[in-house]
Every structure is written in C-alpha cells, then in structure tokens.
Image (cartoon, rainbow, N blue to C red; front, side):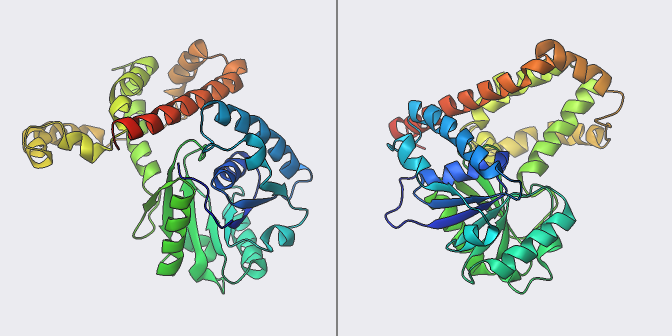
Amino acid sequence: MSKPSESQMHTAIVGSGFIGRAWAISFARAGANVRLWDQADGAAHKAIDYISGVLEDLAQNDLLNGQTPATVLARISAANTLDEALAEATHVQENTPEVLDVKIKVFQMLDAAARPDAVLSSSTSALLPSRFTEGLKGRGRCIVVHPINPPYLIPAAEVVPAPWTTPETVERTRKFLISAGHAPLVMKKELDGFIMNRMQGALLEEAFRLVADGYASVEDVDTGIRDGLALRWSFMGPFETIDLNAPGGIRDYCERYQGIYSNIFPQMQRRVDWAGEVMDTIEPDRRKLLPADKLQDRQVWRDKRLMALAAHKRRAAKEIGK
C-alpha cells in the first residue's frame, strides 16, 4: 500500500453503502480528500461512523501507512448535496444499485454537475460501461472501476473502458489507483463479467456441479480452495502458478498436462441451476457450519482475517520480495 501523496487529491463518493464507504477508507488512507454523498438522509454520516471503527482495526494491523485513525478520518466528510460533493472532485466513484435505469440517471447527473476534468467512475460489477454512458456529452471520461470488497484490504480493481472512453481517462484512472495502493487490472475493452467475475464464475460453476452430481460436499469444495489452491493464489496468479509447476516453465507444463484438462473440459459444458435442487443440499450444509444469526459475526471475522493477511503480505513483500 502506497504512502499518502504530497499534494492532496479531491474525490467524491456517490453512494455510501458497503462499497462506497470502503472506497472512502482506501482513498483517504492514500491522502485524498473524500466527500461522501448519499441520497438517503443521514446515510453518509452513518458511513463515517462505521469507517471510524474500521480505521481502529486497520491501525492495529499497521495498515494505515503509519498514520493515525484520526488523521485519515479527518479527510472524510459528508456532503449535504451532490453538487457539494462534486465541487472539487477530480475523481468521482459511483456506488449506486446495479439497476441500469438508475445508473443512466445517476451518470446523467454526474456528467452535468462534475468538473470538466473529473473522471466519472462506476463500481458496477455487472453492467458494461457502454450501457449507461453512451448518451452523455462527457462519455469519454466515463469508466468502470470494479473492486473486490472491501477495497481497503483487497488491492485488485478492474479498470473497464467503454468503446469511447479516452486513453487519457484510462491512464489517469490507472495512475490514481496505483497512488491509492491498488493493483489495477486494465482491460483493453469491455466484456460481460469483466475479468474477476468470469474467473470466479468458472470456479463457482464447477463447485456447484461437483455438489449437485454427488462428487463432493460443500465443505470438501471449500477445503480444496481454502487449504489448497488459495494458498498459492494468495500471492501468485494462475499463469505464474503453472509456470513454476513444471521444470521447463509454462510451455513444459502445458505440454505435460494439457491432456488432463482437455479430457475434463467436455464434462464442464453443463450448467447447474444454482437456486434449483442443489440449493436444498448447499444451504443446509452451510447453515450447519454457520447459523444464519452468525453471518454478520463471521463477516467481521472475515475482514479481520483479511487484515491479518494484508499485513502478512506487506511484511513478506519487504522481507522476501514480491
């Protein structure tokens, strides 16, 4: 995670739910001034109260770049109006519901009210930027920046341009994310699911098939990822993984093992309805392992584990190398 920059950048967060408040932490920790706005009365102030508690946990894990929680929190404020939030912002991060009509309306408002030099970025995880920016006068400055939640702990963020997004907007967004401690995945063009959901979706499709067809339990599948593949994936991607898994590197790996995957692939060309019959197995198994009334407690546990992992990766990068 990068240190705060010398010159303070002004950002606006539109929508202060889970993703919006997480972005606020990420940007403020990197030194940016953050204005939060939400159409729901009081929502932005509630988000700041939540952020205050998270900053204490981050400080305990040395994840505030040597700053105090009070210093970071002082950079975050609630705006009373959208115009107030946008007044000085050169990066706007929109986090409204995943509804196309809502996105179209919100981006019309942003394009009309934001500074001419502001990048207008959406956190959407499913909608292509071309679908809600096409009719805008300033469509060239519109882009998607899709995080994995929470972005203050998981640095990867997808940068997805529409066909008309300018190269300058893409580059400015990439540099901004890096300055805020993120690891941008810059797509060359838009595609349904972007990169991360397509990769995650492929894994989930197979996970549901394995359970639906009676080959493995829910916990077997989770164990295989949690205590197997994810240990390598937490610091290496799939291409580097296979590059290191054969004596001669990635070409050697493919020559040795492609046949295995070629044989499996035809068996994977069938969908299981995630909400269908298989859910009668998956949900009871999950509720035995985690009762519904413990979900929020487990989410807090998850975030604390992510903090510990982020702190470990930071130390390991310094001591061992990236």
